[in-house]
Amino acid sequence: MIIDFTHSFKDYHEILDFYGVWDYECPNPECGAKQHPMRRHARYERSLVMWDADAGRLKEERMEILRLKCCSCGSTHAVLTMDVIPFFAYSIQAFLALVSLCMAEKSSVPQTGEKADVSCQLLYRFLLIFHEYAEKLMLFLRMETLWEGERNPLESQILPLLLGKSPPWPQSCFFQKFRSPIFLHRKSTVSYPLRFGSAMP
Image 1 (tube, rainbow, N blue to C red):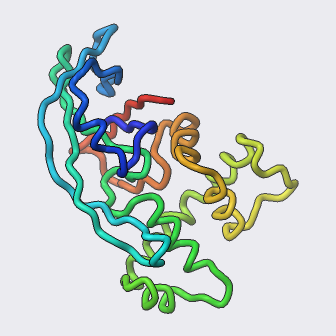
Image 2: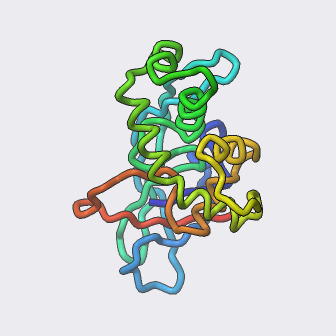
């Protein structure tokens, strides 16, 4: 799997329309080639749930995903963008927006679910994922000198810091620090090992 932090859902057409030389490295750790020439292999469709900030609600988009094949080892890899959480239907913006609504003052999960027209079960899952990432996010904020207090920030203070920066931050920086996309939540990787490559800006 290749995550391109220089592109988003909005300009994915640039990836689909590109027929030149790909500068991505093959994410397969078993690929022994010093250079990783890759070629177009296939496309597939998937849904991505986005957050419409103007309307204050979720919206579902369909997008085509390009797969590339490494000419050296023959492995194939989907090319995702900075706003896609691998193996997840919701974009990172939608995830953060819903968690922010749940954590807002005088708000609750049922109220947020009714307002955003999503199930409480989904929101509780999002909050669980966010809570599981909280410790790593606090470390990340300190590493990026975005939090310098003696005590760790409250979980509710993390969100404004994450949302206060324009893309591709924090996704690309987080990936560079921990070699994993932010909020990736996949417990079993036996049948599909997680192998990430990235075209860093």
